[in-house]
Structure formats: structure tokens, C-alpha cells
Amino acid sequence: MSVPGRPPAGADPLGRRWPWLVRWFQAYGRRYVARHFHAVRLARQGSTPRLPDGPLIVALNHPSWWDPMMGVVLSPLLGRRVHVVPIEGRALQRYRFFERLGFFGIEPGTRAGYDRLLEVADRVMERPDVAFWITPQGRFTDMRTRPPALRPGIGLVARRVRRGAILPVALEYGFWSERLPEALIRLGDPILVEDGTALEAEAWTARVERGLAATQDALAHDAIRRDPDAFRTLVEGRIGVGWIYDAWRRLGALLGGTRFDAAHGSGAGGSAEETG
Image 1 (tube, helix red, strand yellow):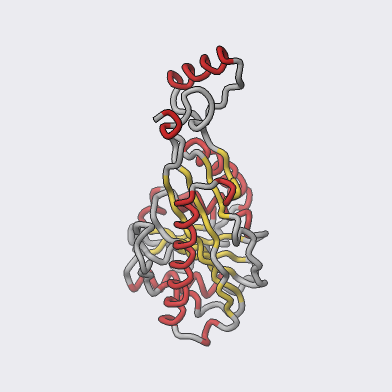
Image 2: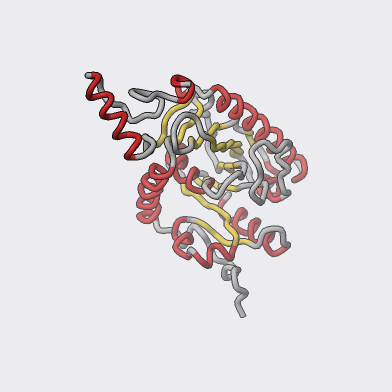
């Protein structure tokens, strides 16, 4: 008898993955994100980490519903890897096609959930080209919370790595000068794993927690500066405020003989700082 929200025992997320659907969803994800954000930006410092051969654990903080979509945008930058992602089992029941993208269901905070997480980790960590994505906080957590307070699953997974790396990834969302928000990403210093069994799970969890907190702190510093030059733009989204406001600014630019720029901080009307 199957339990709602629980995947069938032994289900292999890589065996159920459809590569063509992954490619389509990456393209769709970029378009979807572009409609809802002014930009997705990756901090330039550390944006091309030197990753060793072997499996990669990507450990993200979890401030928002948007986090998986940021992973979709970021995934092509991690090389030619196959991506595996745990998700709450009941959510997977609602979006079954996620199974074809490499997602697998777990029951968070339960023994069965940890068993399923480790079952999959034991399988996929045998592959040198796998990227195992995990939000080790286990629930939505404000991006300013310190320490990040990680659950033990990340340490248990790390012990399954024979030789590879753990990549802390910080996410933050905020408003700068446009109507739509900025999605900001920063890659931390990779944590090299020579032999996962060399440390206990609690020690791995503590190492990842320190690395993720340091990456979040660095991203917060970048975000406060509001300097687009400190970031690479991964996705350019929508600009402008609204058709009435933009039409007024367009008319002002036309009468003034200048080129219209829909960005809120440019052209006729300017920003609140410029006009106040």
C-alpha cells in the first residue's frame, strides 16, 4: 500500500530523468524568472569557483519560494552535470513532472525522510558528474538569520562523498531602483571532501553552516552597496514602472530631444533621489 506523498521504494531519480525536458525547463525557467525580476545577478567575486572532479553538493540558504528557480538559472554554470534535488513528497505529488527533471520526494523531518535522502545519496554519489542540490535549513528562513541553523541531513549526505566538494550558495532578494526585485546570488568557497567518512556528520554540518553563513554575509555586503558592476547579470528582466508613468517619461524625452530609457533611474522623471 502506497503512502500519499511518498515515492515508491527504490525509485531512482536519475533513472526517471528526461534530459530533453531538463533542457526545455532551463529555457522556460529563464523566461519565467525574467517576467518577475528586474535581473538575476551573480556576484563577480567567486563566480567561477575551481571545482574538483567528483560529485558536488550544492548547499543553498532557503529564503523564498523562488529558490529552486534560481537553481535552474544557476545550474548551467556548474559544468556538464546531472542535477538531483530533494523536494517535499506532497509537493512532488502535485507537480509529478518534476520527477523527470531529477527531483525526488522526501518527508522532511522524519526518519523515513532521512532514509530516503540517504538512499538516493548512496546511489548518486557514485557518479562523478552529479550535482546534489539541498536546502539544508529545511524550511523557509529569513536571509538575515545567523547562524543559518542547518538540519543534520547535509552532514549525513556529505559522509557519502568519497572525493568531491560542497558548494555553499547564498541567495537574497531585494528592491533597488526598479519596480521589480533583484535576485542576487553568491557562490562561496568550495569545501573540499577527500573522504566523507573522515568526519562525523555533525562536523560536516558545522563546516557547511560556517561556509554558508560567510557566503551570506558577503552577499549581504554586496547587496547593501547596490552596485550592479559587482555582479554578472545572468538574466535580464523587465524594466519600467507602468505604461502611464513610462508614457509620460517617453513624451518628456521626445520633447527634450533625448533617448528614452525605461529604467527608473534614467531619463525624464528620474529616481526619487534625483527628484526629491
